[in-house]
Length: 377
Image (cartoon, rainbow, N blue to C red; front, side, top):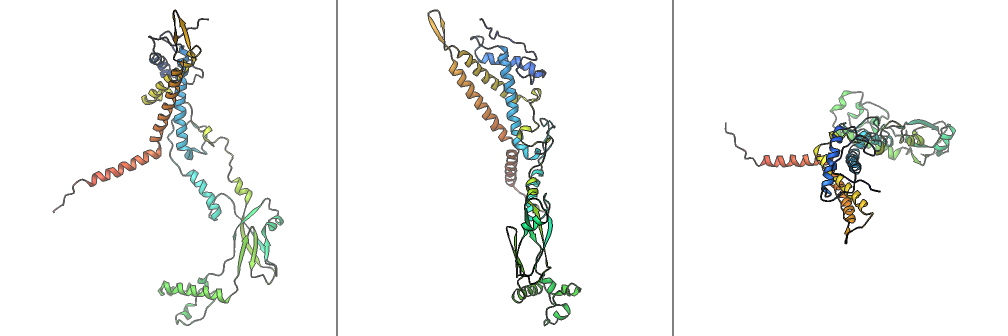
């Protein structure tokens, strides 16, 4: 069977590539034949025959464009994922300008707000237990079961605080003589505008004195909470007291982590980047594509020539360069991808901001070297 090889020219038609990603792009159609000529000549044609057909060159060209787009948009996803996560995945991001946003960081901060009790995305509920005389320990998990609350709960806050010292500061009319007695619950200072004349240090000393007096003279009413087990100090002496608390439902905290987002970007695989438009790729990108196409053609040609290590000719044998072509093709592909990724790293948002910062520092240094004249008016 006599299989035709590259004859020295080609004529591209839509449908000549395996996938047809770019077949209808006029610039791709034009460059397909040019790239075929470029690769064939770099492989030795017309001095040597190139055991490939135009379809092989077109296949390599399509793969090179797709590889370039994949590397480019994979880097775009890494650079912008925090900003595009959760946005509609129906949007074509190829030609979109991504503005960095704090939306994802705010979602993360909501989890901290939940634990701090200052907001967030998990509801807080309130409840209470009624104290019983001579009973010190109260199981709030059992309380939740008795209230028909489904799932586990976590107590976040117990509403017990001693009366603030400011509510027990000496009455103003008596305190003015510096010899008064405590007026518990009195708001005498707040009932008069004259208290503004007292030094702040004196008011602080008075509040600290009240707190110390309460710790020494009064009962130490407090609580201890471990694993939803509430222990009250001292032991209640009568029935009917109320201890209020706030709690959250653990299953609601877990459910707040996962959100249904069937039409949103949830991971790098459904980010809205598609194959590039070949005609919009600049000359820098196209040169990389041409070189990558050549590397693929070297590899393909090496596999073709590997079918026969030697070819008999009258009186001798010709040794084919299969190993050299395959090795060179693989090494060149690796080097090209590495250089492309390095280039993307150098042009990432982080690298550009660092470069701008360095330029700003250098600019200020240069300006500082300019002689400054003394103005004499």
